[in-house]
Amino acid sequence: MSVKFKHIEESQITITELMKPVNSNFSGKIHGGYILNLMDQIAFACASKHSGHYCVTASVNKVNFLNPIEVGELVTMKASINFTGRTSMVVGLRVTSENIRSGEIKHCNSSYFTMVAKDENGIGAPVPGIILKNTSQVRRFARSITRQNEGRNRVSRFSSKVFKTEDYLSLLKNSNSKVDL
Image 1 (tube, rainbow, N blue to C red):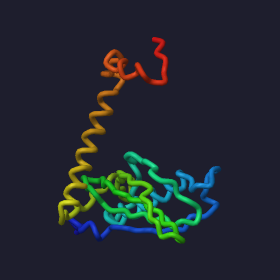
Image 2: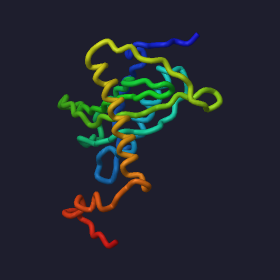
Image 3: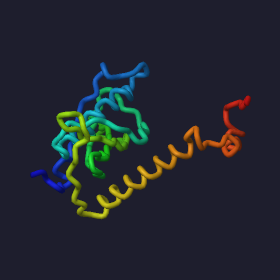
C-alpha cells in the first residue's frame, strides 16, 4: 500500500558545494549552466525522494540569476516540495552563496522545477500528496496553482490560432525592433 500523504520535511534536501575554477565562465564567475545542472539534480533528488519513483523535469519556472557566484564560495541549494498534483510535483529551490572569508551570504537564485514521477514503464506514476502545516506551506502550494493557471493562460493567448497582431503592436512602439509586415 502506498503512502497517501507525506510531510514536506521528509523529502527536503540541502546540498553545499565549493565552487572551483573548473566551473567558471570566461569572466571568472561560476557558469550559470553549471548552477542550473546542480539545481536540476537537487530537484530530481527531492522529487524522487518524495514520490519513491524516478522523476523527470517537465519545466523550470523563471530562473533569475540575482547575484554572481565567485570561485571559492560555498553554494548551498535547498529543495522542498511546494505542490503535488496527481503525478507531478513542484520543487521550490533556493540558491545561496557564502564567501568563506567574510561570511557574507548572498541569495543567488530561487526557482521552481516541475517534476513528473515515472513508473518502471515510463508512465506517469501517482505521487503522495503533501501535508501543509503552516501558512507558508499553504502560500507556496496556492502560489504553485496560481502559477500553473497563469502559464496556461499565457500559452493560450499567444497560440498562433488566436493571436491577433494588432492587439500587440502598441507594445512594440518603443522597443528595439522594426515591424515590416
